[in-house]
Image (cartoon, rainbow, N blue to C red):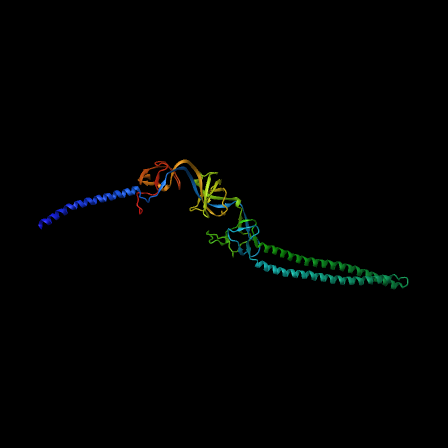
Length: 425
């Protein structure tokens, strides 16, 4: 019994070191397997093919679509200009379609008052005409009476041979008085006619003035309806009076219910044949950009295609670019668009890439395939089922491409993420 227990103790003491060795072997094997799978990358590490092609160096800008000319629709110089109807922004219109309608209430009230004034002026004309007729009739009656008296006096004066000298003298004096009365009546008739003509002219002038006011008011009322001068797409402009802050802030576009000052630009009809893009170019990039360089634009509002163009103009002097913070100096770049998309509209923002250089027959890889290890730039090349580390030397790079000077060859496949790191790392 004692010997059996001793034998068990000896076996246990011998098995301890053996188990320890087995555990060390398993641990080493696990580390090697871990390193192997890290090196091989496992099946979940994506690979990218090294290609030979053109390396394109470009300058990235942020710009906007614009047009060189547009038909501006402005508020009229009349009335209380409150918008009661406004076509939606971006609506397609034909020549003569209503774009903006202002409230005509105050002008229609003024027109009603002018109509009353016109009726009064017409009544004044009729009154002056009636007075003139009455005066003419009375004057003509007096003239006829005076003519009869003159004829009678002359007839009496012609009988001087059969009457006494005293009677003859009386008849001669009667003729003189009758002639004087005729001259006085003629003068009064002329004066009455001049006065009547003056009164009539005043009444007619007042009537004509009211008519002119009514015509002008009718034109003002018709001008409250602004129509499209041509076919195209309407762009509603900002309302500076509705700015949210005196120190800046957003400036909303005109909308129904807004009030506009006389001559305010409400909307515009861009001439899409003059469409172009513009963007500020920083001083650091100005030396790389030149007229004639090809451009590719991505417009956020029309994302399903690229929009090609060329650099058309660059401003000679630098201005202040307030679109960035801090404010910096920049040159204005104008881009001529090639076959612009019909969906483009002024004011749309665009991401612009100006091609400043192109290197043909270059070895290129994506930027995400290059890693920095201990101060060296390396890639992980797929050989069989394993990723092997290889040092590379780079020539040039941009946001989407790296031109490799040495280290990899076209056709090889490199890891798109570091295979030596775990997913958590």
